[in-house]
Amino acid sequence: MIWTIPNILTIVRLLAAPGVAIMFLYFNRLHADWFALILFVSAAITDWFDGFLARTLKQETKFGTMLDPIADKAMVVIALLIIVGYSSMSPWLVLPATLIIFREVFVSGLREYLGKEAQALQVTLLAKWKTTAQMIAIATLFSQGIFEHHFKLSLVELEATGRTIEEAELSWALLGMIWSGHLGLWLLWGAALLTLVTGWDYFQKALPLLKEKT
Image (cartoon, rainbow, N blue to C red; front, side):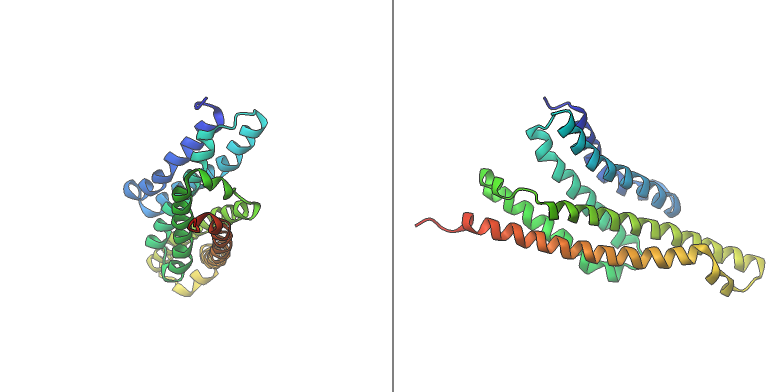
């Protein structure tokens, strides 16, 4: 049965992936960042919740097993593209984002090529931690965009009232922007390293299946 509650949650998460990008087409930056953050965090929660429900209700299906990692990858890749495109820290984010996207494409291609033999590439506990690290890093970087725009608005207000711009350095928006930006960057690098480790692990497991038969 395809239309189980866990599968419906997975489908919603898959549809939410392009929804994150659409936020930036129809709303200004501050509202877009807020909506994207809420949508992304909500989707990340369903990632845990649908798996929990599938096991608890004994509603694990092949359809859900197939779609779940696709929804995860779609959310991560689309969110990373948005963050790199819009964040003021994008030069520092390009490399870890590239490593993550490269690994996801590589492993997906590997599974597609192996077909039925791809069952040997079962999702590991480390791979689940990798996905969690990616989700937390991306959510933190979305929050950095929110703090950044509040900071810019505070600068405009300070200039309009004739006060010195230096006063803004004490604002909560500046502190939030700095801390969330640096934390998000380090988390993304950590997620990228976990991504590479799990990708290498999958490749090693796949090597015996890729050898030419003699």
